Image (cartoon, rainbow, N blue to C red; front, side, top):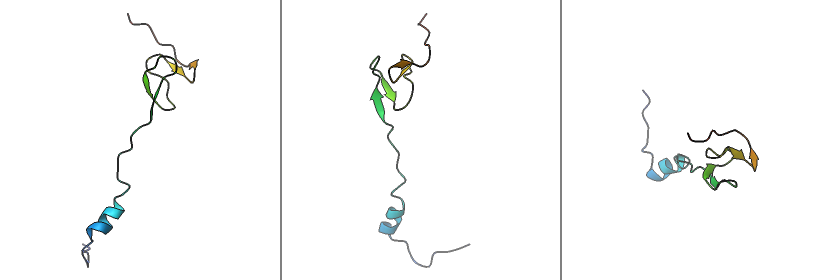
Length: 61
């Protein structure tokens, strides 16, 4: 197995890991009902996308 010849400093190690972070999703409010919705997605509450009805939502029974 390969063994490192020198110790990797904490600065060098941390510079390599700068891109290992969680991405916060962009949340917007629906223009039709005001619910929180992921960006570029159909609203799960009312079924509208960009002001137009995209999917028919059944009424709660």
